[in-house]
Amino acid sequence: RVPAIDGDAAIAAAGVVVALVAAGVVASRSAGNKDGSNRRRATSIPGATPNLRTTGAFDDTRGRNYLIAPPPLFPLVPAFARRTFRYEVDPGRVWFFEQKQGIGLGLNVSVNVRMTVVKLRSGGLWVHAPIAPTDECVALLKELDAPVEHVVLPTTLFEHKIFVGPFQRKFPDATCYVAPDQWSWPVNLPPTFFGIFKDGVLGVDTPPWADEFEYELLTPPALGVASYVAFSECAFFHKDTKTLLVTDAVVYVSDNVPDAIPDRDLLESGDDDSFTIGALKLLNLFDIRDKARSRTRTSADMNVDERLKLGWQRNALQALYFGPSNLLDPDESWAQITNRMIVAPVVSTLVYENVPLEVQRWAQRVGRWNFTRVVPCHFDAPIKAGPREWNAAFGFLPTSRPPDVDEDSDTRFGGKNKNSRVGYYPDEDMVLLRGVGDFLLRMGVIFTDETRPKVSGITGAGRPGGRK
Image (cartoon, rainbow, N blue to C red; front, side, top):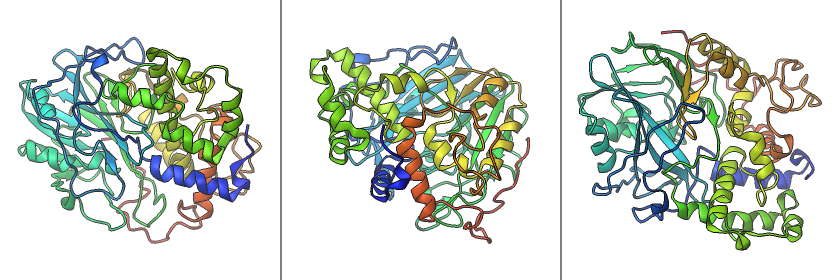
């Protein structure tokens, strides 16, 4: 185990570099139609629990080309083509559409991004968090033989917002409702700059689908970087199917590999000579050089299935932690984080634990709904879970750090934390991520109550939200 990073500015800075190129949701290097994913063509991805999904549908005859414009400040990938898989969750009622998505620069860390489509009582479709509207995606959606009536942008995060405008252009008759406090950085541009022409703002305007969905807004104060940068999210409760839809609030990670991630990516991640492993050896984080020398079995000794499994574990753990304690042999880290609904460590450390009271209140409001399953935008879904499991997922707040952390001097926590769940995350796997968070706090990139601008540029920042 390595020493605490916050005592070593050089290692913390290295962690920030990892954060800047790996943060967001995902990262990846490859794109295109010939992506090496044929070994798992149209295989099913079982649900996280007994809520099973059907086999994924795709259409090789349709175009997958997609160019993001204007180009983002960070390299969102795949850059030129995205394959789409459709899953029928409830026959004739609920579908998932999934693509691969990430932030590039060679780390080859990729996860799935999910758009959920619900057929309303009117017979029209309600679309949550649109993905890239490639010809294939649009064709798979039109095969449902129902008009797209409503589009919803449930967050302020760029990787979900960027596709809403192009999606609207494919379905111009659909209404569009967006989460409040939309922003862009370094220049704070209006949603119309991204082609998003909203019909209403959630929490301000009453949407036409309000009789079928309730929703709760998380609108905390400015998180950092600038006075207008906030991490906002809207949770939706579909009454008829008792489904809770969220964006990044929770995840459920398991051995189920999303179809959208090609085998080529997994085999590369499972290679001990990959770029990421090489970078870790260069920095010698977590004493990885000694661990490499002491290994008796390497990726070169594994068969294809073993490398695929190892690649998925490394892939997912990097997306969750940036860097777990042992990326070479991650079985122990994998066992401690999988097969349970949790808040992703990166979301908790860099967002929720910096505005814990607002998140707690939001989670409590959401937990009053009588839902029986949860659908996030990444990793496994649907998750068979209700209010009890949801409340447990947020039980670590105000902090996931061990009790020996001096929280009395940390204004994020409002005093000594008496409710922290010891062991919610493996502390040895959180060293790098917490070091990144501490460094960003010290540098003023993430705000505290003292450093947060007193006059925020966010409309309605910090408002408690309300059931709709």
